[in-house]
Structure formats: structure tokens, C-alpha cells
Length: 289
Length: 216
Image (cartoon, rainbow over all chains, first blue to last red; front, top):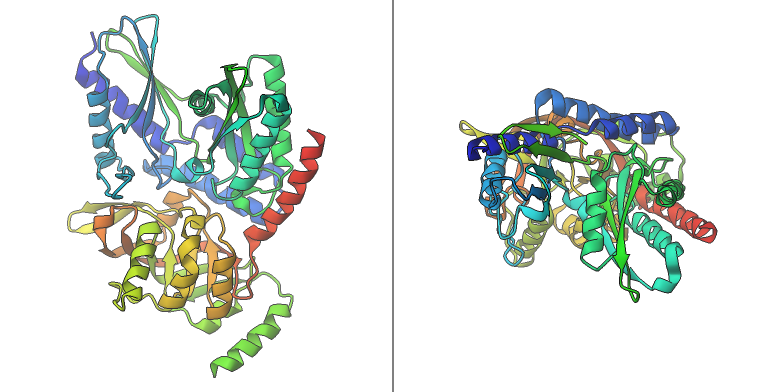
């Protein structure tokens, strides 16, 4: 059985590595974008961002000063021996805030008062799923406010079909413009309901940029959206250019016949995501997706 | 030079086509220096920059509108849309991160803020709107961007966290007084002629959106 200490150690490592290191596939995509861009202005932005990502790893400092709202997606095995993870995750977030350090980003919505330690009512945000087996998989996504603010939920008229879906994805990225720190990554959740479409859209951002949806038609939709979005010309940091979006990931669920929910989750280039797997014997590994 | 003369000269120079240039400015920044910058120019700033986000903008304006003064005179200084990561190491505050935040949130305050504080430079990311551009034209100020998320790169220019005001607003929203050396490269995105880089790109994207919507 894993000790609580061991679990906390692993979770702290997960939070730390995720906050500091830009995933390899994203760094690769940024370097490719640098090759693709022709304007000196766009290239200068990408050059600074790539250099920043490398410096963060070298100096073990947060990749971005907006260290995000801590959110965990937990896949809890039925036979994993520890059930109550909230107090453990709160301790881990408090320690990470102090030691890495992270910026305290958790404020009371009415008074604006900052809790000072990234812990507050329902924060860290936890999504639980009970799955078969005896392992615990923890997915961590500290998402910044800039790209959170440009995310959107649309409840479109089902008669508009997939064309309607494409249109709202395009409108979201157009309206976002330079605000979410492009080049961005776009997660799209189609179907479900008004809450679940957004969860799907956010979870889609855990997918690597070089992985397409296993469904061939949806994979094609992802490719089509990527190319359409990049024709907008917003470019790195909105200075104009060919690369506005690094990748599009679509997830889906069945829907009500009267509703076609579309969640569009915009993610900044500093796309921090990490996954850790804990086994019931107490061992763990950090998997950077 | 009398201010009317400056205005006349400015009107003329706004029509001139100039090559992009690189400037090194020190705070306090003069109106003349602020007015010579054009969209596309690169600037490095040395001296004092003061962080101000949503809550600090609101509080500064509330004070000034009541006839009171903010804790630091912002005239001719640069404000920075930034909520840094800071930690006390011994007796001193140290910055561990300090890239810019999304400037658009401050659009509701910035025109009045420029008018009433006399700041010359606004540093941020993601662009600002017409009200800010109009105030920059009237009062002689500019908006420049640092690449968003370039947190570690930004603090390389911070020599010292000189002071902090309004910590009751929380770390991100407090006003941090930073002593910087060659902070940049900053890209001029709104100039005192009212030219606005992000607005231009957005208008172009709007046309392209309409085209692409026809073929999907």
C-alpha cells in the first residue's frame, strides 16, 4: 500500500515538472513554427518564447509567471487503496506554491481576496473518474487566465450540423486574437451537455500534438480546422503570421437531440500538462504526454 | 518647446514613413521621446517600471478621483501589465517570474489612467483598443509588448524589486516597483499617432474569417 508521504512526493514532482517544462511535442512545434514563419517580427516572438522555455528548464523556474489555476483529472482505480485525495492534493499545492514557487492565483470571487496558497473553495479543481484496476492516474493542467478567458461554450442549433461546429471554432479563435498568447492549441468538445462539452474540450488538450483522434473522420476534421484557423493570419503573439494554432484536438460524446454543445478551449503556447501514474505498491512514474 | 509646437510637429511626423528603429529609453521618459516612437520600433527600457493590473488600475483611479494620491508618482514612468512571481529571500523580495499579462483587461481603465497619471509607456501583451490609442495620441504615450509567457526571460532584466505597494490586493495584483536594465526587446504596438498593430492584424483576420467561412 502506498504511504501518503510517497503519494505526496510523487504528486509534488508532477506539479513541479509540469509547471517548469514545456512538453517536448509543443517545443518541437514551436521550433517548426519558427522555420515556417517568414516575417522577422513573428520569428522574433517565437525565438524569445523558445529561449524562455529552455531557460525555465535550465533554471528550474516556472515556464510562465501565470502558474495557472491548479486542476487535476483523477482516474482512480477501484482497488487503489487511498480514496480521499483532496486533503493530499491541497497539501501538495501549498508546498508547491511555497517551494517552486508558484504565483498564488486563487481569489475569492466576491471580495477578490487572494488565499495566498492556491487553495480555496473547490480549488484545486478536481475531476474524478472511477476506473477498473488498482492504479491511480493523475493528470495535472495548470492553465493560465489569458487563455481561459478566451475559451467559449456554444449551444448551437443542431440543424447547423458540423459546419456550425467549424464556424464557432473559427469565431472563437478569431475573437481571441492575440489575447491567449498564440500560437495556441485548441481543444474542442462536441456533444455531451453544457457542462460536459467544456470538460471534453479541456481534456482534449492532454493529447500530444502529433496524435490525431483515432476516428478517421474526426482526425480529418482536426486537420481541416487547423488549416482553416491558420489562414486567419493572427500569428505568434498576434503580430501577424502563418502559425496561429499549433494543433487542434477534438473529443466527443453523444448529445441530446435538441442540443449541439460545442466547447472550445483555447490553450496558450505555454501548454502545461503532466500525467503521473501511481501503483498500489507505492511506486510511481511521471509521464509527460 | 511650447506644447502647441510639439503637437504641430507631431502631426507632420505622423505622416512621414519611417524605417523601423531601435531605441534605448530611460525613465523618466520625456513626451518628446514617447512621441518619436512608431509601431514596429523596438525599445529597451531602463529605470523604474511599476506593475499594475486590474485591481491596481481601479484603485489608482479611485484615489485620484477623490483628490488623493497613489503611493508612487507615476508621471513619465512606465507601467507594466504583469503579476510577477515574487518571494522574500532574507529581507529582499526576489522575482522568480515576470512576463506580461493580457492588456485587453485594462482597456476599460487605461485612457483615463494615462490622462490622470501622466504615464508615458504601457507595457503588456495581446494588444489594446481605441480608447487607449486615443489617449496615447492626446497625451503622448506608447504601448509596447513583451512576448507573452516569456517569464524567465523578463526577469533577466530586473535588477531589483525596489518596493511593493498594496500587498492586500494579493501578489499578482499588487503594485511592484521594479528597477530594470534594458528591459526588452519591447515591440511598439500603439504609438502616439494612434496607429495600432493588433487592430490592423485583427481587421485583416476579420476579412480572412469571412473568406474561410464561405469554403468550410
